[in-house]
Amino acid sequence: MFRIGWIFIIMSIMLNAEKFVLVTHADSPINTLTQAQVRMIYLKKKRFWGEIKLVALNLPPQDLLRKTFENEILKMNSTQLDSYWIKQHYRGYRPPYRVESIESMILFIKKVEGAIGYIPVSKVDKDLKVIYRDGEL
Image 1: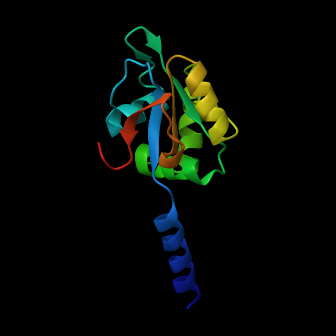
Image 2: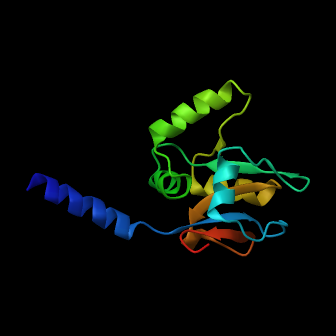
């Protein structure tokens, strides 16, 4: 009975979780990305878009939106990602920049060319361009 209760709680959280989008500055030459491209950018396998250096942004590790992004897009949990980045460290690669809040992510994206990040759909404004919609591309 106890397990069933936890399953309902987890399912209700997942159903109530707001959908996210990946955004960049409105003037960016990037128009759309596939899930595979997003994954390559966040795992630092793709670091440039033409001449523009890509700057992938992450929220803090405990953030629910980050966990959702990692599970749905990167298809990795935090343990797998930690292991991945330990190996990448010895190859000279660092994980995406971490910002402390969605608001800081939005400000960073608006000011830094090539910056991309995931935010709730409700936070998109005219200065941001949606380049990936969760589950749509």
